[in-house]
Image (tube, rainbow, N blue to C red; front, side, top):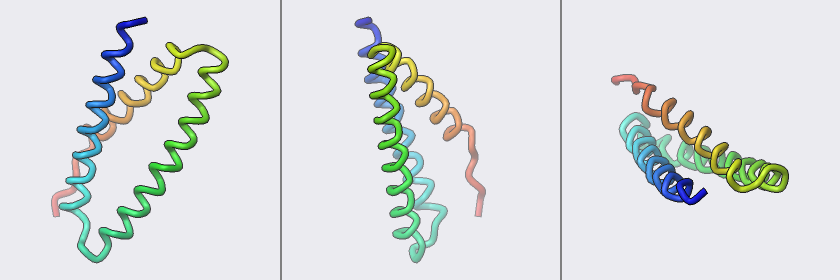
Length: 92
């Protein structure tokens, strides 16, 4: 049970790296005129996903316990990171 705490910190660290990579790709691939709009849409999209995951984690936590939440979150983060790092941006 104690081993999941360091893994949670590693997952948060990897998520921050993925977030920085996404921001860098957006800055390089989107024109200045569209950047604010797309950034706002991205923020809205992430907030909606965050709210739904918080509700889902609460439901899982009530039913199955905290360890299952960490396992489920780890799976989601690994899938997200693998998807983000496997996609190659188009060269303009």
